[in-house]
Image (cartoon, rainbow, N blue to C red; front, top):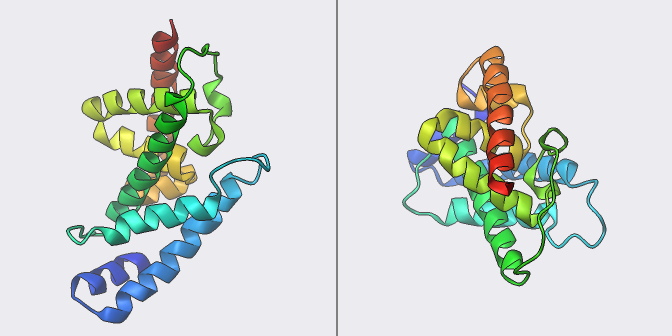
Length: 186
């Protein structure tokens, strides 16, 4: 059982210090990950890693109804929170640019959504919604890899699957997403 899972158990039991420990442990981990992924962004980028992590944490911690059962569940919720923040931001930016042209993207170059333009982000979100209907576990893998930026082995651990299974699913999903994105642009 990981430290996060133990702390989540203690939070569920009502230990007041456990929530503080969880914040420290998870916040630092998510902040480092976001900073690493956004290091190549230009100076004028409007969303900074710290802001993304803060917004995600506020969504996670602000939900009094939410209970996390384990590390997988918590990181799934964190991935979903980050995805929603990025999608809402992209939709807001896209509303002001009606009628602009689409351009072809190379999905193999896109590692994390915060590096993608708003049109790509919205197209990936739409395709991801369709994938979630077909295969929720594969959709979670995409969220953890694409929106949170976890490595394949970390995502496999968070989902509770083997790394080889995660690799097979990731290869399938990349091809599936490429096909869906191509179809949406035609």
